[in-house]
Length: 380
Ligand SMILES: Cc1cc2nc3c(=O)[nH]c(=O)nc-3n(C[C@H](O)[C@H](O)[C@H](O)COP(=O)(O)OP(=O)(O)OC[C@H]3O[C@@H](n4cnc5c(N)ncnc54)[C@H](O)[C@@H]3O)c2cc1C
Image 1 (tube, rainbow, N blue to C red):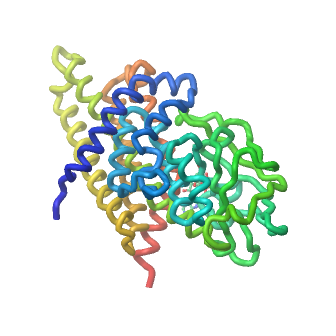
Image 2 (image 1 turned 60 degrees about the vertical axis):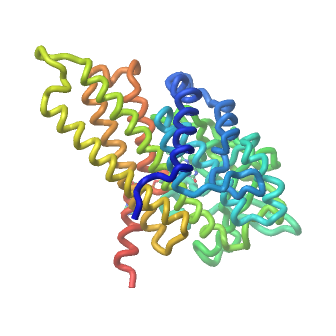
Image 3 (image 1 turned 135 degrees about the horizontal axis):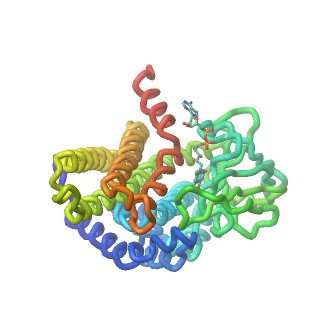
């Protein structure tokens, strides 16, 4: 058992850390305040391969494992969790096309997605199908050599802005999860439209909108995998997605812990540094301990997802549960250590608090993570 990063992993982490310091951290507060979508920064990230981290090299990906992906997501979230998570979702959708799409779909879509000349969205959630995603109702009916889609998706990251939509829709009314298929749909397809941009607590550097289908005709050849494979493909995507979202919480929490350590050494009350109160040191000690424990679990889970072990889904769920809840608590404690200043936009903690909150909700809520973990424990 060796818990050290390899030389290559350290080099990737350093590269992502440098990129974040130069291209993300200086601008993230402005993106948040003005709701700026940093398209150029995403393309710069893609130049380093971050748009296609675990996509195969034959179509422009960099073919790394989920551990390296976690290191990259964590590093970028140190500057901006919202932007890092957005890149994660693009990686997940792109990987689904690359792993399960036909050769012709891969050739048509993956190179542009790898360079992030085009960006992809993952479209599973519907207004009445959130945690119970397999109950989705968007219909895809065969008509000659096209499927005709009707219905709608809610909360889609990149909705209305991204060029490519990886959509789960029902091709068979008779069965629940087994009746769902996966399609790649271009933004300019007739019958595809978008809702208004959602107004959110955080994640301001990325757009979120409903994606709507009104007799939207999609060539049969745009199906990813076989009819009925869609839900399985969507869930496989989520194993890695959950690792990445957890990594985004770790990166954001680490930033806030580092900021808090610096702040308590500067700030004086009662004639001494607040760093010298034992309560402060105990709080920092707990933050550090919990963060490192969550990080260790996440790297183990990432390795399991890379190796496709039989228990990977359960471990990815445990990692998401622990990292996202720990991350939010660490950020909240960091804000507390800043006193009233933590509540002001002059310090980053409040932005990280708002950005990390949604990590406990999307790609499966904490309650759904417990359901996935517990279900495995009691299954015969
Ligand atoms: C900013 C943002 C971006 C998003 N991006 C995307 C995206 O790109 N693509 C996409 O497909 N989706 C996306 N989502 C949707 C997200 O995945 C869902 O919001 C999430 O899965 C929860 O679904 P819901 O909101 O319908 O909540 P519900 O499913 O209605 O849940 C409400 C509450 O009930 C609890 N609950 C539900 N079922 C159970 C159960 N069996 N046991 C115990 N408790 C339960 C939940 O944990 C939660 O607390 C995004 C959401 C947000 C907020």
